[in-house]
Amino acid sequence: MDHLRRLGNSISIPIPPDENGFTGRECPNSDCEGYFKIDFGTVFKGKGLPCHGPYCGHTAGHDRFMTKAQV
View 1 (cartoon, rainbow, N blue to C red):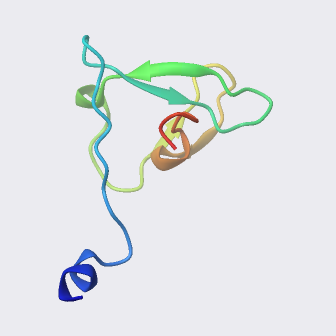
View 2: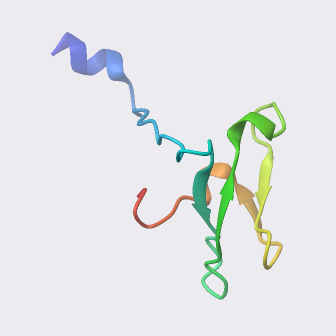
């Protein structure tokens, strides 16, 4: 039981990039849901920075742009 307590309230599951180093993302805006890929090595560094959908400009946290398959 101690092992479970050490996990806390969240877990981290890595999502590996494709053969070119890109990771798929999807806009959470239900009117858009546009699919795009990003290279995590080129994003801004820092906590809480927003992600912007490239098609409709929707802005939200990076954790909101997961694809349905990733969820």
